[in-house]
Length: 313
Image (cartoon, rainbow, N blue to C red; front, top):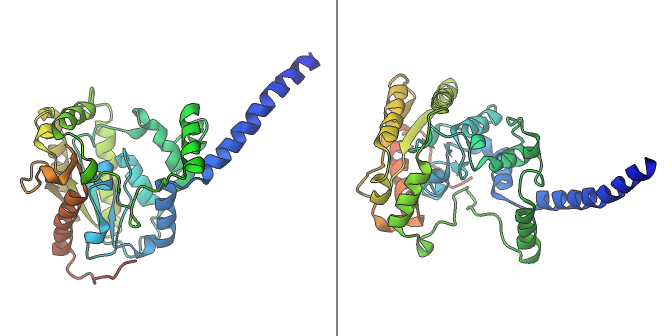
């Protein structure tokens, strides 16, 4: 029996050692979550305007076009519950924060990240933001939360090919969706609308409650909250389920009507956004991001006229 356990130990030991080395190397790699977490650790008390949300904010709102000190703390597939967690983590450090900008997209009130195909992203909040909201232990490791082959590719890409994993600007705007590499707007519109169409509404009540909590957080801390539905190209809009879209818009209007610290703007069919503004049918490229950010900034300015200008953080 002792010999059996010894053989098992000798078999497992190299696996444990190699796994530990890979875990260490993966955690040393720079990534956008670590970058934004470090930025907020050091600068949250200087930010006046905070952009939160999913990829619609990540690629669509560029802080260099705002007149106030702004930062983009959004991430791909970031759902409302994680927006709230980021706000809560720095609750005592938002000393200069006057405005939060948050997209309410076609899918925002129906999706929860940890319950969908993007659930693996929860590990980035656990490991790099130190947000301990997940109860799933593998999300507290790199190795156990992803596929082995994927992790090998990540290690090869960074340590051998020297690929830069920081895919955002200094102020957090996503830089990889640009006009030079734009996708076919008609194909991506149909694909995106299909991907974002819900099969049930099991998270609707939970996410509307989370949104209400974000509004309460803003009200408690005397912060203006601007909600908006982002622009979309016609090929995306034409393939949306109108019931899902109408429920989303009506829910937001109902919530906003009951508070005096928030407002809602629907840009989904804003005709000022044209084909050259889009990377794909529901995401801005750098041209559209400038246009959208300036539009949001004008709204902020109209509501925050007493805030001083800035030269950057």
